[in-house]
Image (tube, rainbow, N blue to C red; front, side, top):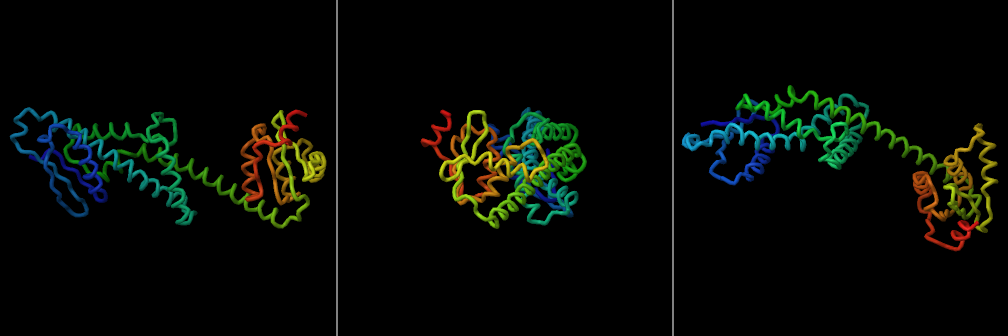
Length: 299
């Protein structure tokens, strides 16, 4: 007797593989149904059958409920491992057709990492919430009234809300990707300015001070902070100093051969120093502790 029929155009082998994994959890091995493959047109069918005698052994509840639970879990795994990324790729290629294929690949890799990073997150408000529970429940609802299942049909007609969720997640990732892309271009331009700029100081010390700010010193440990501020203010229309902009601008103008950061733990805006490290690659070092560090704290 046929107890369940699963049809799929694309992922029948993956579905069977996941079903096998789920059915191994059954302790009563005699309950595991036999299966056969059948193809009709483009659809591959996986047909599960049991002997009529098994139904007479009071196992009917397992085949009406238990088996469908294991199969639903297996299909959920296939959706999350493969189909959700097919859906994302489809949205990416239509909604964001401006990207080249290699960029699509990068974005897809980013979103895979994004989902897998917090795969078990149980908050639907989080972009990378997997919706495993909702997909599973939708499958169980389907199997309550049906013994025949077409994978692509389910994905197309019963997962419309999930497609919207995936699209929102993709929009978020694309925005992050664009931000990172702009940041990398910004760094590239700043590196170019540093390369063409005439070196004004061979060495610059950046000293973190107690209020979270910093001071700049030359190779002779002479304070050049005020001089750099004056030069920055002359080139800026804004009367209020943005210290992040000031620091980056000052270092690019000076174009030092070497930068040493002292009292790093005192500095508040760590990301700006990561930016400086990226701009002046190979030229920046962080001092663990020296007399200059100690003296600057005691001042």
